[in-house]
Image 1 (cartoon, rainbow, N blue to C red):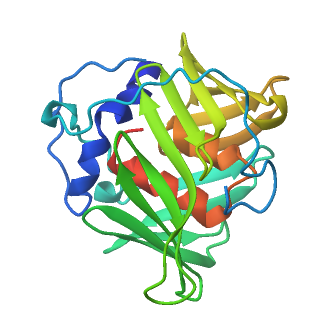
Image 2: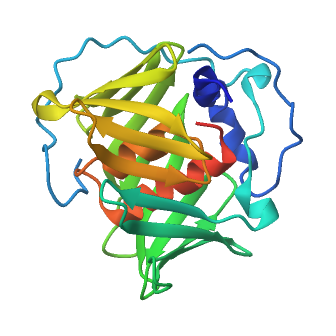
Length: 250
């Protein structure tokens, strides 16, 4: 798979409407172009200062729909590790979506796939976050404390031919990625400069010195890698983005 293929998600936003069923591969033949909820790191008011280069595609165009690789169809698990190789979480396919487990098999949460969104609950079964399709990307929300309450936006992800942007709830850019040859260059808060590249059956995220920050195994997805490396997002938020990337090619 070429690095540009990682960005077919820009043509696939509308495909989230079919999350409950498997798409037929080749449904789209378009060629690709190139927080409120986190425990630490940059806050909502910080911006990378990077130019806002990504453009938002026409996600409503049926020709932009495409099936992604679907590990759940073959029972394949996805592992996300930190830079030291410690397992952050494992996604295991389940009847309703995915089980989120630790490296030693402990239950961390569960992801439920619905027609136009995904929801994740914690180990005790309490609803935690949801992800909804928005234009050419998605928005990540915290579930309300009380039933019937208002969802609290955590972050938004926007994709385009030039790359991607991760924004805080106020619309300020936190992370911005741009394809450069076989790699994706990422700018983040506090001058962070990362590189995302393919490795084996997944992707690896490195800092400017070449030190590993995150590794995704079993899924070639730039956003899954960036969310996995970003300190602004907690484990269940990272798991929800990785689960989404299995259904819509990111």
